[in-house]
Amino acid sequence: MKNKITPTNKERIMREQDFIVSKTDPSGRLTYCNQIFIEFSGYSEAELLGQQHNIVRHPDMPRSVFALLWETIKSGNEFLGYVKNMHKDGSFYWVFATVTPSYGEQNNIIGFFSVRRKPDPQKLQIIDALYHDMLMAEKQAGSRHAIAAGRQVLDNVIQPTGKDYREYILSL
Ligand SMILES: Cc1cc2nc3c(=O)[nH]c(=O)nc-3n(C[C@H](O)[C@H](O)[C@H](O)COP(=O)(O)O)c2cc1C
Image 1: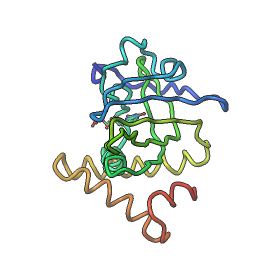
Image 2: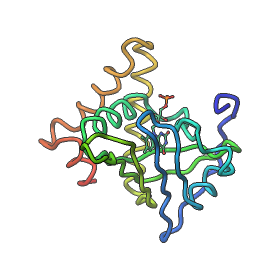
Image 3: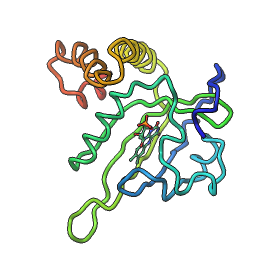
């Protein structure tokens, strides 16, 4: 469904008081979306629930960011990052997201949830340029090597700072 949407240059900007919240099962299928999620995605609750979270994926997002996201949350940690998402009408909206696992009684991962706030526009300029470089590297490397190539661009930016990914994101 999402592949048929043509991205546009129209941006939707989160308000200061907004929280975009969603929950998924362990495979990333939506089990809950709050009202603000529904508003920014442009889909109805019925259209969203049961769908993969990539329903809001924007083609400008590097694959390696999502690889890092899944690697982080599957190993039980909290992922923090900037994500460009796409509304049903092709417009885009940037979020600053935290994604974390939810645990069951046996300490097993029973799903994930995410809370997103309005990103600082100045920080977004840095991220937008970085994601652009990562995406170009991914496209050049071809499908099989895309994730490694995108990650390399990210590492090349972060390594000289002496920080890890999370510290780098928080230091912007
Ligand atoms: C709780 C949770 C929240 C997520 N939020 C987003 C999101 O806001 N936007 C997005 O594109 N992907 C999000 N993802 C990642 C998607 O599951 C998916 O990996 C990503 O859209 C890339 O899709 P693709 O692998 O089909 O290219 C989220 C995943 C989880 C578990």
